[in-house]
Image (cartoon, rainbow, N blue to C red; front, top):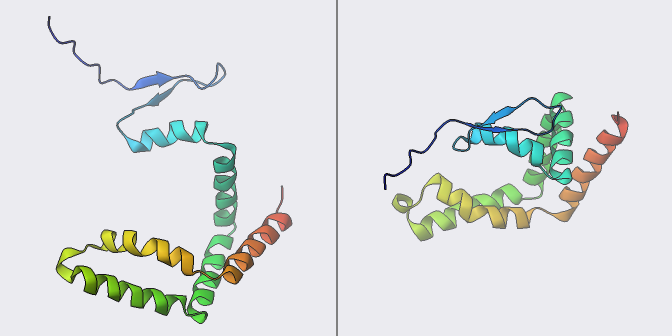
Length: 134
């Protein structure tokens, strides 16, 4: 029995009857993004909307600057620098990539962010959203 030839054309997906067909090529993440954005959870859509609003209004960059300053003044940056040096010394400079280093230090980096900094940032985001609610 001859093997069936696999059809490599993009699949047609109908999101609703009112929506025209969207071509989704399953092998390409850029096309998958279109499909996933229609099937994201309510929480994910809300996060994306908030992020978009923060970015459009320039608030995201301002919050990032505040976060950088707060992390530097509480010593987080120095702690992470020391942790990076430890990991590099332990694994050897020739045996670790930047990606490996990021994977290794991320959990500790998140854990070391002081609760006061997290609460302050959350308060600023909520205040911005309340002020710009549409």
